[in-house]
Amino acid sequence: MLFLVQTDKGNLLRKSALLAVVCAILLFAPFASAQHTDIMVGGGILESLTKPTDVATFQPPQEKVGLYPSIAGNFYSSKHRFGLNVEGSWRYHLGNYYGYETYRPIFIDANALYQSQLTRRVGLDLMGGIGVASNRFNLLASCSVPGCINYTSSTHFMEDLALGVRYRFWRRFFVRPEAHYYHIQHNEGFNSDNVFRIGASIGYRFGEQSTQKKKAPAPK
Image 1 (cartoon, one colour):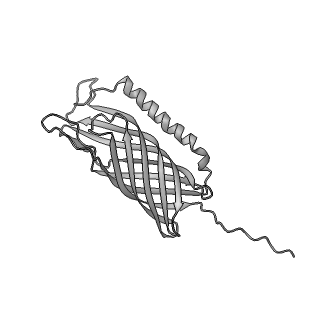
Image 2 (cartoon, rainbow, N blue to C red):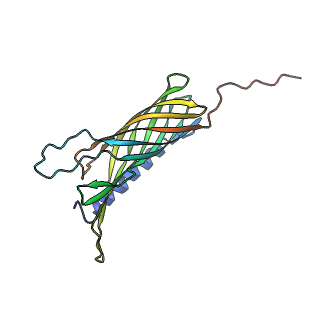
């Protein structure tokens, strides 16, 4: 059992991390007066490159595998090539924690965005920012005693970097293979603070303004 109850320290960390995300959104708000808005949905898997080093003693498992749906939005100005990205991803099915607990990670982040148009149909997204990694652990055994809590939640501040390659395949629809790196502060319960989410998204671009100037009407 990892924990039975939430601690005041955990609640304070959760509120601080969420406040950090809100501050990041307000910081990048000027970018939101954008010419383009991209809405994306996707999926991916989680990978952790750190391996357990001692199989003779109990060690936290690797935070990896599982299907992670995602939803994201880009707010971008073609004039400056900079913008704001906000994104959320979560594990679709509950993970199994050594057979006696289940868990579900959730990642929420806000990023500065740089978009580069490589060709007419291909573009590059570079992102970096901050967010929160939240996890809820549930004991498999029932808890019928009044006041008993059979779960615990933890939220951690994180930094993230991401790279995506956009390919516009039809009108304003595009597909984006992508890779995300999360550095999760004090990622208790797992054996590494560093995880990667690898997947792809499909998206649609709204509000693209024409770059052609309208001709003035001819004088009568």
